[in-house]
Amino acid sequence: MGTLEKGITRTGTGYGGKTWNILGQVYYPKAVTDSTFAFETNSDPGQFVPVHIHPTQDEFILVQEGVLDLKLDGVWVQAKAGDLVRMPRGIPHGYFNKSDKPARALFWVSPMQKLEALFDKLHNLQDPVEVVRISAEHEVDFLPPEAND
Image 1 (cartoon, one colour):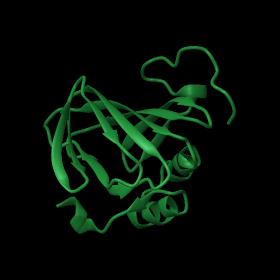
Image 2: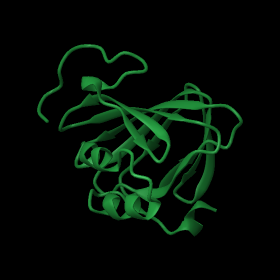
Image 3: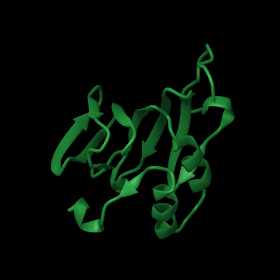
Image 4: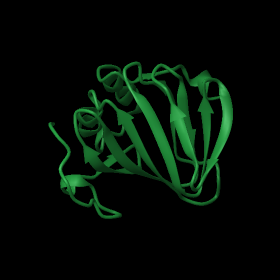
């Protein structure tokens, strides 16, 4: 990808005009470089990303609107607007919008590794089993469903 370009990625838009729909959630890339990858998520009530591990990336979530419930290294925690969640590489985590209102958050990982390529492959894919398989090929490993309990 290269170096960071100066500029602004406006709200409700993705860097380079790109947007992904991953199992019904809308993702907007905000900054894309070899060293970091930032993206915004919009999660309606009931939407979630199951518990998974990034073995080669540190990840952060800045909740911008709403509330996210997170399973972080086996413990349930809650992050509200303005809170920053820190997830070191190798730590199991998943996020869930259990509220009755939409949530919006800025995520970023460092280094980028294969995450942008993964989102490109998952765009508009509807089969969760295929999402898990493709994710494993891109250094994102989902845990068994019972990890979400």
